[in-house]
Image 1 (cartoon, rainbow, N blue to C red):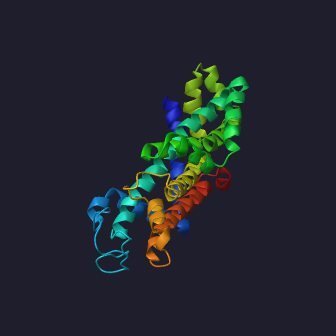
Image 2: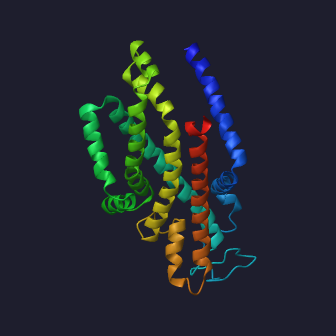
Image 3: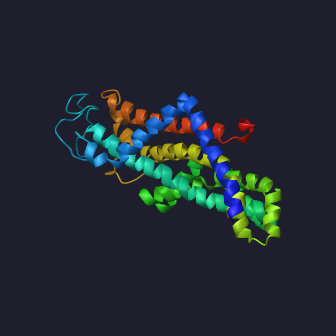
Length: 290
């Protein structure tokens, strides 16, 4: 065990140093980290920084930008800035939670299929192929239509829709890693298959999985916004970016701010996550390090 730790520590340090070095040179990644960090902080401290209650209705309906309402108000007199700040909580929570669930299930299926092969691989991959045949958003819409709307149903629907992406990436990596000499050595030493899969194969397959996770987070946020825009999202009294866009679509010609500001929030978060994903892809690519 001491030998494994001694060998792994320099590798981890080298990877961390490469992440820092590439981040220092990548302006887009720095922009992504800063912007995403600001949105995460805003989501955490939303009750303290939002100027008003996001659901409080006033007589200041359809008011443009002002000192009292920096982003204006909607058709019910609700403060748009407050609704966008609180909407950050829902959008980021759904984005990250759905990817975590999809990652756990997809990675488990992918590593089992790639490591064991045979009939298990055939069964798992036929299911993945079936899911792969349909766009993720169509699958999410169907599942929401079946199970109903609501926060947890949205998370479950989007999670299930993204399982195939992680399963395919993990399986392809496992097929090559299982043939490495250190895996054969682990088998010779009598390690169990579970220990080999999750202690030796998975750590060496994490780089593309992490990159896939960053891409999936942005897709999940867009999926939630699209479902809310179509009326298939969370409850109507819960502010989300997609719901704010849906509420204001009938007034775009009269109040431009109802579409610009929530759309800008979605664009900035998705763009920053994509920049971070590009940075991780380059930083974790072993071919770039040679």
